[in-house]
Figure (tube, rainbow, N blue to C red):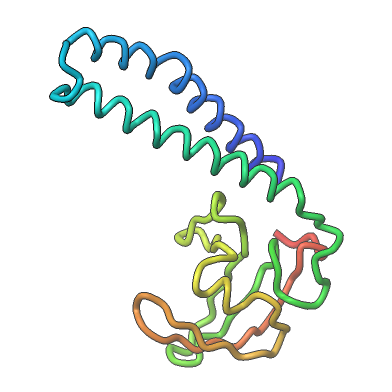
Length: 156
């Protein structure tokens, strides 16, 4: 969680720099062009300012959410954040391993899936031996949870 927090804080620092230093200069420069009703640069700078402010609010909210996570309260026998699951695809008869992570850490090519992804959501709260049916962008998939390592097992 510390790495995520640092990543979010760096993004926040960059956005605050843009909001407080870069954008005011762009807005001032655009004002110098004259008539603000017909000034595309001015409108674009104001729109960007609005987007940056909204993103800053989102990052602050996400930092509060991350800070409130108590890893000791995560279940020891069910899928949750930090769990590594070995799934058996009942349709293709293949095994696949995923680790459930935050959306900021997500990298499906490396087996890191977000707890809010379709597969992540379907797995949350399930136990070893359970079967899950998941609607993915490529259609329905059926899995059996063959092995579960929770964050408490310290498996990588």
